[in-house]
Length: 269
Image (tube, rainbow, N blue to C red; front, top):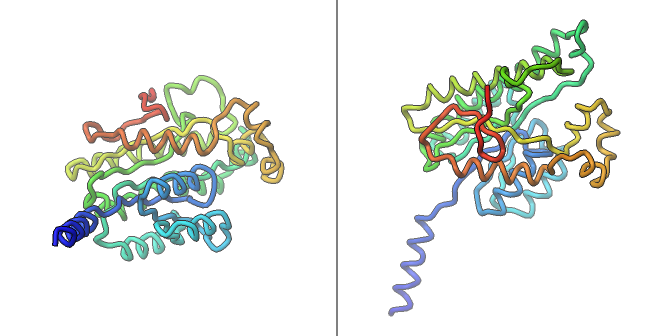
């Protein structure tokens, strides 16, 4: 009899202790893939989005090993896809929304004297409108949750006060400055609902994107060894993701629309 009561009590506890949910955009590689990996390992339900998940072998393999990972197709510039996915998850609380999807844009088209209007529009669409629209679409889900947090992965390259010298990526810098203002607007829109919004700087991360920023082709960047990455003095995608998760967990709702480094310190803007 006592055993039956204990088992029943345990079932009630388990039923009431539902896992927290995180939605991560741009989950197919780099920081995004690491965020999915680490949140899943911590027992979170993870909604991992990518533009073309059928081609994302690492993400697919990870999901096969973790039943708490759900992969969804999402191009953050496609408003129809965003609306459809938001409708699919209507009414489901999402504790943390991480807008990770973003583009660097190669140096070609960002060289001074050869600025590309097409590249400008592409980076603004992906790096600025995408996070803003995704945040708008899933704001009700976030507001329903316990944590109520929206994050965007930004960059210090968009810091106006730190810009003292020419940058080889003026369009990227402009898009990162713009997304910080965009997310500050999101923060003000959702403040009364208790939602906390933060712009986090991931650090200089050892990814193919960071090596492309140095002028390498995608193929050359993919061939870099761990030793060469270490020698560059950067952090791994795994370490960056761990720091992002830690800083996100530390947000207590007392402030919103803030710019933070990956150690939780404020970034001058």
